[in-house]
Image 1 (spheres, rainbow, N blue to C red):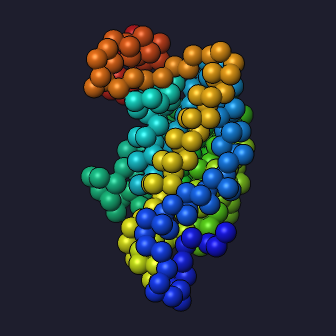
Image 2: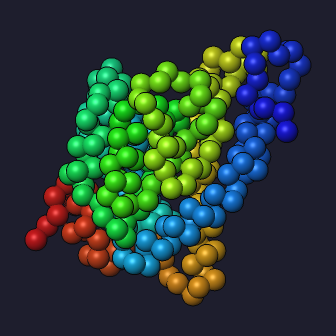
Length: 258
């Protein structure tokens, strides 16, 4: 399959943006399909053992942390792991600076204190900044397997700010196939239409689908949130809140109630 991320010298008669995004999705399916099934198995093993799924990212990858946490149809035993300083909406320049600082990622993992049978999922398109690399390395050092959601192509094209990459510390790598620089449009000289969130969200949705199928095969009922905007949603979620609020303090405002 031709590389859907088009070089600057490409002719002007290439497919439009929708076709290129769909080609990247097909490319992702081909490249990451088996690993997605393995990731579902790793998550199911953790959930069966009453573990927590610790999810991390920085900058715009925090959009994917939001996608995994307290989400309709999503897993209930998910804990977001982040330093508020990597959140870009109230100080974008600070979030970039802190993501590049050594020690911050290690500190957030030390505070969250994951331990087996937990599992970690770390989102970072480039996987080359200290923050996601340290999160993965510290989790792995604690015996917590890491699922890295990253792009090999973007990583190769990114500035190297660490001696290792996120993928180097992962038990499983889900390659999102995001091109270097993230943008796709126009085809000849891309400068807009970033695609990393689309591809990472699709990857996570595929993991959840495979996880659901695997649990159904084993006759297991996964702890999943229901949309609060449908009848009975709040009532259905109440038992999950009672079950996980002490272990996921972010469900109740940042501190686990007594």
